[in-house]
Length: 279
Image 1 (tube, helix red, strand yellow):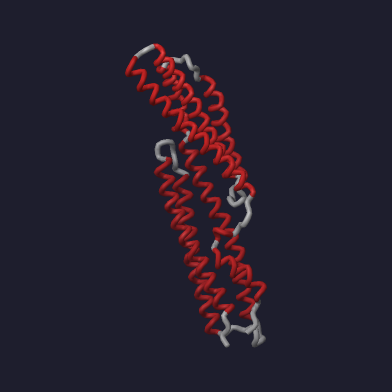
Image 2: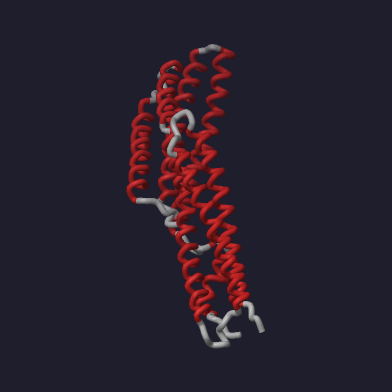
């Protein structure tokens, strides 16, 4: 039996490979990889600086000499400067990730979030200049706590942005799937109205196809409810609850993604019913 092969081609491909491989190229992802690579290098630099600090601290409390104290102050200042730079690198990597064209996000939300990160980056770049190698350990500790306090207050915004990145990917997948689903449904309607024997489908096969569409609709209702639940949950993230709320929201997104994958499988069943000959 002849079928609408060209119209089916993209639908078959989508259902075969799944939503995760829709985009073969993404230049913004390459830019992110570079920025994230810089963050990883800076983090390794911090680990080495911290090891030097630990060693200097041990030497100071062992000998309590002026030279060991000066070495401790120097290594402490170096470590804290790099610690601030690590945060800057991390924030820049999040901003770069938000630029990924696989992520659907409103300009308003993106711009607002990026501005918050840029404000933190500006503050950190200014703050790292406050560390002096002749500062006493107590003074360095006070300056370090300023960063700790600010970082804790920023937790809600950090975890919200990480959530919106994951959510934005799912929205992109969803929009692409909805377009192809509509194409598949319209194709089925055309075949249903077809009168030529070479293109017609039997009533029994059409019944099976529409049952699959019904299953997709049921899954879609549950899928939307899960997304709404996750969105409402992350909105409540605060300084103290951010990580826990984020983890719960991400678990909910994972459940939604599982339903989304089931919708893809059901759409594939529709495609199979259409393309397999009854003769």
